[in-house]
Length: 494
Image (cartoon, rainbow, N blue to C red):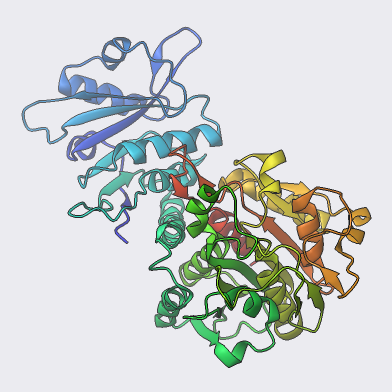
């Protein structure tokens, strides 16, 4: 994973002109004048050194200065290394605008392995968001023969906010990891492969990895029912723990991620069939929790964290579960299977029940690309968040706005619980006993049956977990949604 590196350097003329590319953030004042709010003095010094007037150069393009708007001019002057000056619109300089500007700049620099000096944002406000957005905008992934998949550039930013830039590096690396996992095609990304990627974290002394497979999963009826459709290599449960010495008295967070490495829908086959093309990303929840816990040794929060990756492939075969089957989830609850394409809640329920019974969490969070219904009301910019803890919901909503992983608190409507009734089992898993619609709500109500009395949050990321285009900080394909939110929340529990 060749991710660009964010470095710090003082903002002065020699450092700015001593790199290949210089980026300056600009706005347009109420008087219609082009200004460089974060680097006025530096911009003027560069103009004198290069014999240019930046406002005149920009006027040729009739700029609007909307966030992420980019123009560039080539430069050539004796003794000056700088090849291009890049102008980035900062919009109204809100946190969202600074993220858009950073992402646009990162995407602009994708093909280059050369260094960049960025004087777009130098103030404490928004520096981490802007810097992190640069890394996220730069992400690209492909398997084309003879092409480099990622750049290795060095990008210099202000040295006024070193801690924020170091934090951006750590979180950016984690999001890139999640995106790498999601983008990997499913003929490579088997459950065994995904477990092997998690096993690499064992190299860190603060992280311990345990993998359950085969007979070790006897009690995990949901995982076996789904993963039994693809018995080679079969399902896996991966347990990763962050528990440094002396951490027994710290708050304990358990993260449970849906890890469906490919989802055909099983016997209830997805139709139209092109809906399957994106289903290599159905393990985005597991990718998010793996990436989150991978960053904790660098962040060092005083919080114990356990990540559970519930990994299976939902395939179509002679060993697939059938509509009308009855399975037993971890802990003993019997469940009537109605639609084999509602498989994610089955593997999550096992993980939640196991966490409640064995891990004694103070907080229990699951994250999954769970329901298409979640996108109907919220689109692809917000994840659906379910919890009965209003204080926790308010905290996560606020962190979502600042981190960029935005969530919307959705209701757990008790009137809809009757839809989970079954004539032959404790529950039916598809809310088919009543016609309430609200598929994202009823899926959350199903999961709630397995969390005991824990402080529980369910994040349905079916919308923002995947993007159909390069847009803002999102890359086309898997977005790594949830990593920024979870890291910021866990760090704040210290």
